[in-house]
Image 1 (tube, rainbow, N blue to C red):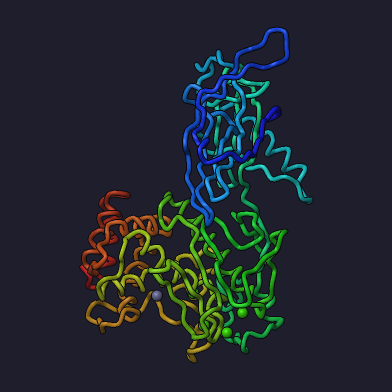
Image 2: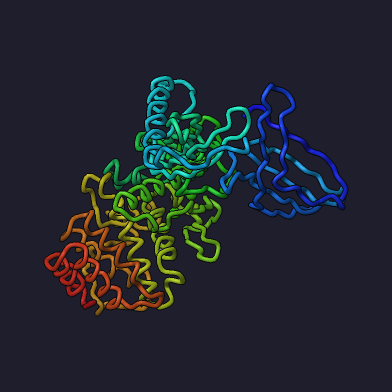
Length: 485
Ligand SMILES: [Ca+2]
Ligand SMILES: [Ca+2]
Ligand SMILES: [Ca+2]
Ligand SMILES: [Ca+2]
Ligand SMILES: [Zn+2]
């Protein structure tokens, strides 16, 4: 916007009232046109150490004026005004000739053309990234100043980022298209899911976190998607909040490390949680822990990791094999975060706790399936377990123990094997996609203090409503085999 009057003026407290509907007339020109600064709408009040700050949106006939702002700062220093309003012709017509749907289409065309050009230009150098068009909303707005007009302000959100386009509400021409945020992609190196499985080698050892050729070969270069562009491992699904040795930072989003570097585990957590949340979205769920999950990496020296519901944080321990070197440990803990998000206060009974552990183990196993080439699928945490098991395959727990409710011992991890076995049988009976939709959908109906039987019943119900009687029967059979139903 040109012609913007930006003024920061100190006035005395007595003059704090804001003149509304102030009319001004342009001084030069043969036929002076009446303009107005419209009205102000309070949009935000903030308190700082020195005082209060009132932010107003400039409006014209009830519509926002694009980039038109007005702020009043009240402090011991008195009242300061920041005036960023644009004059609008008083007679500007605010009825749109162009329908909103057409504006959305025009905006999408302009964005996609720009995104395509950016992709070509940015093939291997730093160029502006332009997200492709996504879901859009259109709102009428006014542009002030010399090019004053009525526009549709179209916000378009895709998983690559969001864009705002201003489409002339008369002519349909796209006046401006601006990237509000782009989600960056980065590079990283990970184990997937862990070296024992990817190398199909039960002899690998931690050797106190030392680098080795064998373990280096087990690393795989990956693209890190959905990074927020801050140069940290932060995105819509994962936030590496704290870490031993500090959080990884690279302005080019380059996060390639070897396993002896503590930052390697941060990349593991980012990559594998982003993957799992993208998968959950593919299944159609938009509200299963759909948030930037906080992680604290290598900050606990015991051989344990945990999800803390009070802080909504997953802490990954570094005892033995660093826990975050095994994606199955990450996925297990993320399973707890999922249940706590879907069922507030989840885990209030022993059986609910066992379902929590069993679901975490199951989630680790089902997430491993696409990258495991069938190797020891029901074995949970194959790499982490090399530190504390001597029999092969090395598994912390399994999802195919054959345990039933006759084997209940009152310990959540042990009893969790009854539940995870049922889920694993459902996985084999229905296939991965259907099984995971059924299991996640069922979770929405859990009580915080659910029992095996109650949780099983709502899972069967989910199967019946999603896929019909025959599939529901397979789910029932899986629970019957565990003597849960
Ligand atoms: Ca390590
Ligand atoms: Ca370690
Ligand atoms: Ca460990
Ligand atoms: Ca495994
Ligand atoms: Zn657990």
